[in-house]
Amino acid sequence: MPIKTIEWIEGKVKIIDQGKLPQKLEYIYCKDVETLREAISSLKIRGAPVIGIAAAFGVVLG
Image (cartoon, rainbow, N blue to C red; front, side, top):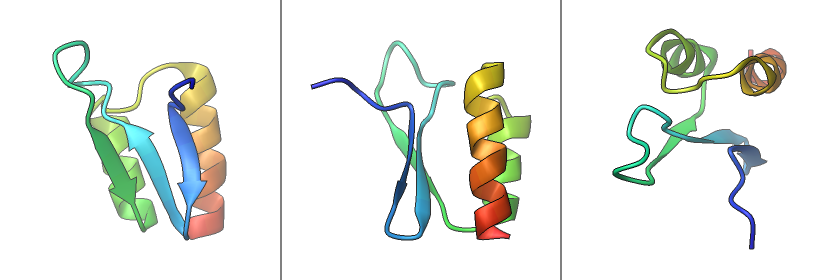
């Protein structure tokens, strides 16, 4: 089964913490825009496609 980098689960955004890779596979659950913004600015989310998807989810959260 493929690992999803980002997905919407029960009103939260579930994201792989890319800052912990490759040593650990850890997830962040963002339930508000501020948490999501912090994840992006602290490079826990990397790459234009994933940041774009996270921003779209942020609009839904906001």
